Image 1 (cartoon, one colour):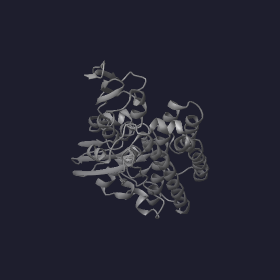
Image 2 (image 1 turned 180 degrees about the vertical axis):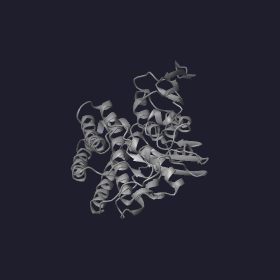
Image 3 (image 1 turned 90 degrees about the vertical axis):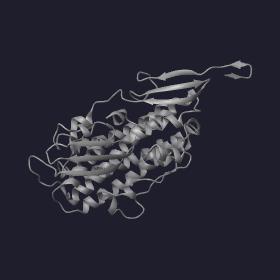
Image 4 (image 1 turned 60 degrees about the horizontal axis):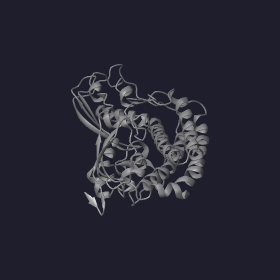
Length: 376
């Protein structure tokens, strides 16, 4: 086409799996005119490992080692959704102590995930202090999770019927100190970056805007959807674990209306503070809970009754769903995953057109996905 005296033509570019600006092995097929994106087509499948099919060949204890790996930034949350589906089918009520400990760990895992995305955003704009502070805060939580579970990334701490072990002596006190340190980071260098650094704010303002209507149409959830004005959070709307028993005012659903990259990062930062408040409340409840079991004793071979069930959790990146179908065996007949990252990435096709090439990395990174969570 022609723009005045300057003749231009559309160019097809591939932001490929190997491109250093790509977050993981995701391919974006882009049509570009000048320095703006005209169309964007997310191409997934480069990391497909067939986890859903592998579930069918492993029993209900073994599938957890696969379930916690598709979103490697939220291993605990991914384990949790599977065990909740199996426990629902078995009709198991886990001990109260396990309910509150699961809630605390799910929120700690949420903070871990959000800190990683904020660290990446900080490093891309300003190498040094804010990104390093976010990673140091992650180390504080990872050390607490490792002390409890023995793992730093793939915790393998959930099991059908509850949790593997009770708390080590002094863990509650060390966790209080730890979340205080993380809160200082969130309210200090990260808040200075996201809320007051004009260079950071300008880099994300108006970039890759996603409307509430498009977020709804593409099934987007989590902080990406809430940054577009969707007031949606399963912890409040369809509560599970201890979320149904929280006092008013502790669980706050953070939203924005702008729907741009800056709004998405603002939601992440605000949600960290909400999650730390939730952890603090869970620690108070655990401190007042009498000692007792953290799991239900089950047979060596767990068999679910014939039937089907669906469990959904508010994972750090959005809503994860677990559709379990059983034929009465010790393995699932079918276990279908609905992962938040898949929908978040599909929305790039409507959010990226009109984006300047210089803003492309910021735009894509602000859609908060893990590639294994897309491909499964």
